[in-house]
Image (cartoon, rainbow, N blue to C red):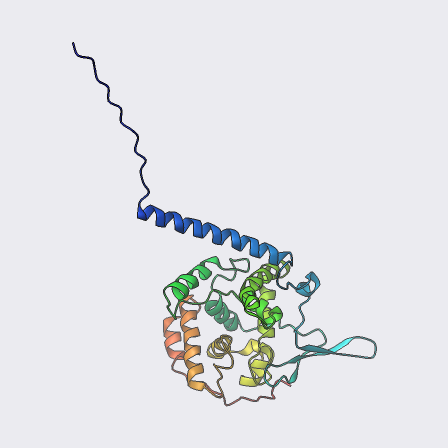
Length: 295
């Protein structure tokens, strides 16, 4: 009777495939990006790198080009802001009326701004992760010009109020993360309505028209609350780049931008398609333009 032969198989270690190596590498890269981002944001938040305004400045933002006129007893009479155009000082406020309250703004203006610049404005806390990811994929990876922006209205306000000019490549790299941190802090100190008011009150619409009050007077000789849909859409369109979309010098280009805003308002349900189609046919009208009308 033969002896039973037992065979033992040596365990063969499975070699990782090329595909699994790629997947592992992607996850490692993703983890490294996440960890480094957390570290950078943490260092910015505590002021270790970059510049974060003190809490008192965040609670009471002052235009970096603003000057205030005081009476003999120390009361603020007027506030003047230095426009980006020739750095000319223009009056933006008298006493405590520096902010245009929501009741003094056309609801068309608010609808146009949110529809175009930040459709999830009321649901995020300063940073719109979805819009940011979309912008990275479409514009950064796929190189699509129509990928949309990732900046929220709060981030744009942070840039208007506190973003200094970068003096080096390192500072330019840090600018966007610093804006994100400041945006989150602004959301902590202000309501959504106050953020909208601050943004509209700080934006430079050219021709020394700093803020929506001056802009409405300069371009349409109206109060902000009296702006109609197409006028509101034009001014919001200028917020993308007021020098490029200048209705006086480039009316056709400005009209194209205004029509984009009207399209966004239709998409968000604030106007119907019929209204959008009708308003898009109206030419930009600068009959009431008066560059000194806000003074």
